[in-house]
Image 1 (cartoon, rainbow, N blue to C red):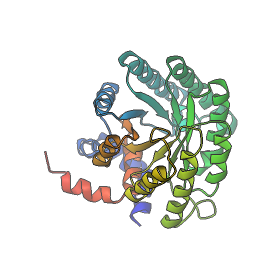
Image 2: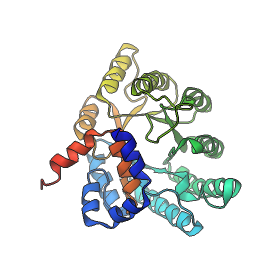
Image 3: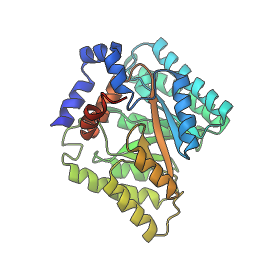
Image 4: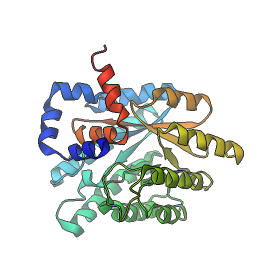
Length: 309
């Protein structure tokens, strides 16, 4: 119930406009968003690196409908890659295709524009030895996102990967398709509302599929990211790795900025690789609402800590 409520709010344009302009809204968002500027995001990255945690930087924004906006979004990513190289940060970047033009000009023009713009970002990342994660969005973007990732991987092997969502019925086949090409996968549960015809409706089924997929990924030769804050699933993977004598650095745990910091540090201390997604920017509202939808306990956390210094 709460999940559907927050997913619905994530697309409410009026409430989004009010929240993103509001000082109160920005204050609340800072639990999960590392500030509004590139400099603030880079500072957060340096701090996490100092704790032994790698970073993926995410300039928030999506559903761009003007070419100038798409180009402006891309410029931020080039700025981030320059900062990563200059400061020798243990970091890469994550970008949504709708942020760089996927929805502009119709079903043919948009994907071509997005592929061109994100291709330039991947080329930049490849040049400096970094990496671009093409983020996954709603199910209507699943196939185009995978196809664009595949084409860019052929041009820049090892410099680009994507995300698969365990709640989609197709994800097992998609995982095999990408692994066969050596394409890095970030596995998450999924944070969009999808119909039962294409997605598991029950959380227990999503969890079962997630565990099956994560075991497949960590036993493959491809370096993948296991993105979860679910302590039961993390414990299960810890045991699986120990039982099968899998190198703790053959994959990495991935978590979100501001969520389970204690667990992030614990995994680092145990010798696992950990990467934290560090989002930033003024267009934080949809991201923030999806975090509340993913884990309604975050609502209680915010309520308890709102008035603390």
